[in-house]
Length: 103
Image (cartoon, rainbow, N blue to C red; front, side, top):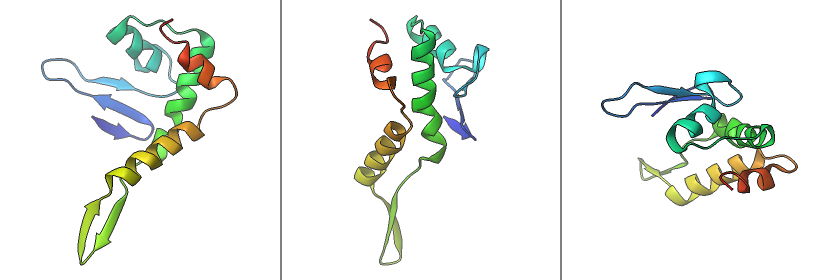
């Protein structure tokens, strides 16, 4: 996986790379990716919720600590910070729309 701005390009061995961008329509959209990998069709409200959730990914990263001249990845803080960032992007009604995906 490689990130460029808010877009993510996923490459699987033997397949063409897939570029996915929050808010995009067509082949670069999250909705298109979900439809291709799981035959999941999103309503307009669900698509808005997914874009709100993944639109915040541009500001996530690894949390590191510097100790005795060495750098270490802090996995617990990385996961908690990413979760907080993603959930912070949600707006009114998004959580209910996300829970209803696939039902």
